[in-house]
Image (cartoon, rainbow over the protein chains, first blue to last red):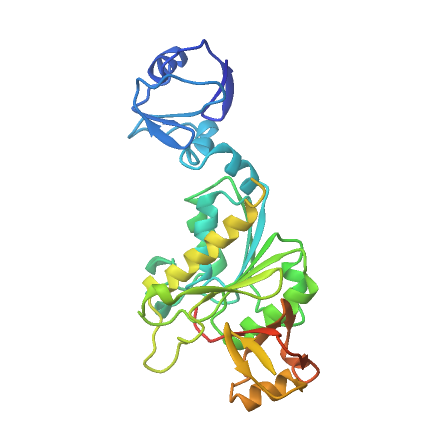
Length: 266
Length: 66
């Protein structure tokens, strides 16, 4: 029967256990994952099983690592996300976390757009490090993502988006993520993209400030190709700060909605 | 006439524009995008969009922070 081991298709006898398989292939392993779920070494393999064999404490070779990264996600999901393209507009508190979450998920092409550099007031909620202060956010985020998933394409653009350049920069992507800080810029992106890019799915955010309940974070739809995540009231202002837990929670909802949309056909 | 605004029933004047409806209901228009019966209406069109009986209107307000 046919199974897949660490991304490669092989033929084995019926009633082979996963431990016997590891001996057969001479792959040392102490963590056995089948179809995205960890199993005991006595697990008897079935036709079409997707198997990951992992040895803890040991760096796998590059050929297998890409597949091992997605052991808990499944090959079908991996294949679809690998061919997907998303663009993240603004990579601050929302966008840096959205981009990392989608890179971890294996989205194959991620364009990140921001004009700014990393500075000290970013660190409390954005995914950057102190030793990245002064770098362009696009370069800093690319460096982080390459340490998470080196198998995807990151396109960096250091520009300020406006109503004249937005369509040119974001057209051709499956999902457009609006992750700006400024309310007027959010509206600009939405108004331009909803009408002019009907084949892209647009995910915005509004109302992410403070440390209010996360259960007031809702998803509202705008037409057939756009949704917006947030509480729609808590804006940043004097004595109304932005903090990691709530901004990250909204970013995670945006990223989850992107994955849901990209995997809608399976 | 009756309409549904953000999930709630409202009684408003007959045949008014979206813009006039927002003014009458004392709703601030800044940074809002509307959806009327599933169709997106942006701010430039608020004064052209006529609201009819039983329309379902959603208002999405964009506030700063990210």
